[in-house]
Amino acid sequence: MAQAQASTGTQSPLDQAVDQVAHAIGDIMEFWSFKPSMGRVWATLYLSQTSLSAEEICARTGLSSGSVSMTLNELRLWGVVGRDTSSGAGSGRRKKLYRAETDIWAMVTRVFKERELKQVHRTVQALEHATSLIEEARAAGEDSERLAFVSARVARLLELARSGERMLARLADTGELSLGVLRGWMGRKR
Amino acid sequence: MAQAQASTGTQSPLDQAVDQVAHAIGDIMEFWSFKPSMGRVWATLYLSQTSLSAEEICARTGLSSGSVSMTLNELRLWGVVGRDTSSGAGSGRRKKLYRAETDIWAMVTRVFKERELKQVHRTVQALEHATSLIEEARAAGEDSERLAFVSARVARLLELARSGERMLARLADTGELSLGVLRGWMGRKR
DNA sequence: CAAAAACTTCAATAGGGATTGAAATCTTTT
DNA sequence: AAAAGATTTCAATCCCTATTGAAGTTTTTG
Image 1 (cartoon, protein in one colour):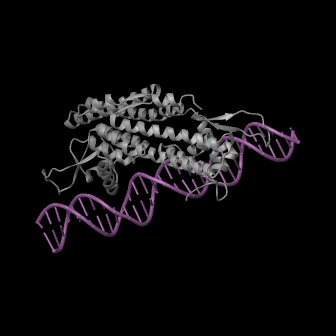
Image 2 (tube, helix red, strand yellow; image 1 turned 135 degrees about the horizontal axis):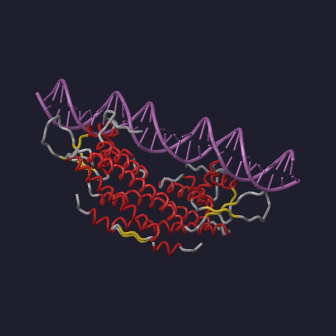
Image 3 (cartoon, protein in one colour; image 1 turned 180 degrees about the horizontal axis):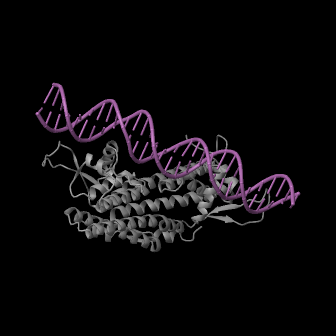
């Protein structure tokens, strides 16, 4: 029902299919905190035999030219879209042409490295900072039961966050992940 | 600077530490598309020796009572917060008391199963539907090069999504994950 | 080198979801 | 069983981010 398709009312089943895939990819990208437009644009390119101009992409996705321009650049930044430097086939004016990168493995890796890892690392840093505040309190002579408790739990969180960080890093470049370590380690410890 | 702390202006280093951790957990939860308040509330409980009433949690997080109530229920739904049914120690009126669950492994597993898996499955379904639209086009006699191309690529996406689904499922209950399969498989195939 | 086309940028808008706060409901106490 | 207290619910609000669209810039073409 809610089809923001640019073209005229009715489309062929094939067009519908393409549109649906674009939306599906948009949705999952959004779920992973990317802009939905990134998913839509990438999918549109991925399902096109030929490389497309920004204008074409506008037409097919129904997004504004501004949005397409920004989205395209972002996608290029992520390395999932490339430019096609074919000077040839000059029918219309000279436009830049884009195509989807197809090495999905590289994409996933990249995303893990740059996004998940970065966020987890931020958390590690925050926890480290909290730890130093706790040390400060201890240094200032505080010696309550509460301090001991909080200190222990923050230490535990920090340990966990660091493990997570290591695991993601490993996953990102070896493609192997075992939560076994974590599992045993967190186990039934309170 | 931006400390939405309920209590009075200045806090002890220990309080600051607790507050920071709560915010850090809130941030990473938000990054994973949960409500930040869930992280804040959970962390507040996790760093408290004693179980807390909703009122206490309001005071410590600065969130509204309504928000705390809803957040608490959601957290309980996720199984990461439990109620403490101690009838004892009656100083004030009888309030429900909450404590943080500490089995982080269980939490992670749960989240994977219920959230990531569900979303990936939605994608699989969407792609399956698109596939059936393509079949429809083919059945209707369409036989373009474009159809063949789109069909192949959608099939590829579907294969990928299904692999992802299987892997997540496996990860969720064995804790083991190898992207090796995927890697080799996606490899340099175009 | 001027005009046209393509592309980028950015302030304004739209849209969605988290949070509030107060009314409604349910629970406990006297 | 009434009053006080605690909890839940939900419409209104707030906040944040994605998208727009038009103005500005760069590139291409005659």
